[in-house]
Structures are given as C-alpha cells and as structure tokens.
Length: 289
Ligand code: NAD
Image 1 (tube, rainbow, N blue to C red):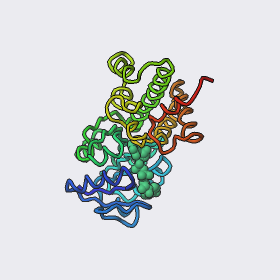
Image 2: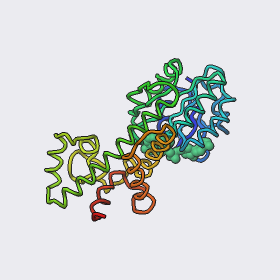
Image 3: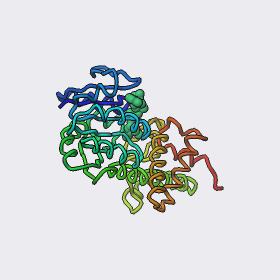
Image 4: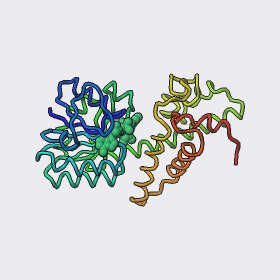
C-alpha cells in the first residue's frame, strides 16, 4: 500500500519502519525528525499526495488539526486518514468530520504499548470510525500491532484510550499509596504482593507492573523508575480524560484527583522524566496531611 506517515518521533518512527519492512511504500514527513530508512517528503501535503492511507502520530489535538487541514485537500477521494496520536475526543471528531466531508475515510486509532510495543510491532489499536475505513487500515494495524479493536464511530478510539488510562492512573496511585501504608504498618512488600496479587485488590499495576522494586515481575521500578510510561504522558492522558468528562458532564472524582496528583508530581516535584510508578517513592517520603 502507498502510505503517508506524518510525525516520526519516538512512536511514529518505529511504526513507519515496520510498515516499510513489511513491503509497504512509506513516505514520511516530520518537522524535526529524520529517521533512517524512510523516504521523506518536503511537506505533510507532499507525503499525503497519492497515498491510500495517511497515518499521523503527533503530539496533540491542536497540531493534529493543523496537519489535517493541510493534508485533507491533498488526499485522493476514498483514501483514509488514520490518526494514531492520543488527542482530545473533540479534535478527533472535528478532523473526522472534515475528512469525511472531503470524501475520505477517517479513523482515530490511538495505541497502547509504548515505544517498546511500537518497535516490536505489538501495539494495541483502539479504533473509532466507519467500517469501510477500518477494513482498509486493518492490514496496517496487523503489521504495527497485535490487536485492533473497532470501538465504534468517530472519537470512540480516543474515548476508549482515555477511559482505560484514567483507570490505570487511579489504580497506580491506589497501589502505590497501599504499599506506602503497608511499609508504615511493618508489612513486608513481598508478602503484600503475594496476598494482593491473588486477592480482590489485584490489578495490572500490582500484578504486571508492580511499583515496588524487587517485587513481582520485572518493571520500571527495577530500573530506577526509568520509563516505561513517563509520568508526564500519564498526566497528558488524565487531563484529556478530564477535558472529555467536562464536555460530557460526567462525574469523575477519582480521575480528577489522579490528574491533580500527577500534575503536582510532574510540575512541582521530581516526577518529570520518571516512570508513572515512581508515585511509590513519592508516597514513601510523605506523611499524612
Ligand atoms: P514525539 O514527540 O516523540 O513525536 C512527535 C513527532 O511529531 C515529533 O517528531 C515532532 O517533530 C513531530 N511533529 C510535531 N508537529 C509536527 C507537524 N506540524 N508536522 C509534522 N511533524 C510534526 O511523541 P511520541 O512519543 O512519538 O508520541 C506521539 C503520540 O503518541 C502522542 O500523541 C502520544 O501521546 C502518543 N503515545 C505515546 C506513547 C509513548 O510511550 N511515547 C504511548 C502511547 C501513545
């Protein structure tokens, strides 16, 4: 397939490389990055021209809207614009509306799996958009990932992503504060893990990504909390969840508190650049009040 790929940063570059390796004809564009092995165009519109699918992997909704305004007029009717960035639901829906009005297919297809999953081709795609557009992009999701879930119409992929990550942020905080309480109660961390990971408090953050070093399977905690999934990316997703909750008038008190705690951690404490599980050493140092 002829593919335009716009945004070749930490995630986009390995995703585009996997598509090229699988035999697709990939033309990239990025304002700054120049990854090896990808043919680069002079502009986003030039990368999009003649492509059957244009994939974007950009930092935020504002940039997505600007890039979409440039590439939509350059794309041929029937082609698909597939945004894999994590952006606000409103931007995803606005871009899909513009693309469909121009006779294009449109998908919002944010991913989970991080840079490791992007390199290994094991991402999970959460996809919103029409059936025909999903069917066209599916073979590409199969190259870049191991699973693609068609979640519904435009914006449904972003909705699934931010709801998942709201649960993840809240659960990580709960797991970390429970470890810090266990410490103060004199409970050994390995015993705590043994009990909780097989009891009703179990979760992905406890069982698969334990924030306590030396406990449970290997995780960023065992690597001095190097990310992994950086605290500032968790903050981005929690803020998107609260922006969506505000727009949809949904009551999300735990998500709101998680966003506040990660904001403090990233912006006022030492969280920036550390894995989001570094909430545990944060709680360890604190007292009540
Ligand atoms: P990144 O900052 O490494 O890459 C973004 C790229 O977009 C950069 O290379 C930048 O130069 C380029 N860019 C910015 N404006 C542009 C424009 N107008 N035209 C062309 N290129 C432009 O970010 P990333 O880590 O690759 O993340 C990309 C997206 O994926 C984000 O929305 C992020 O939230 C999401 N995401 C990231 C991860 C992760 O672990 N890094 C995991 C899941 C989802």
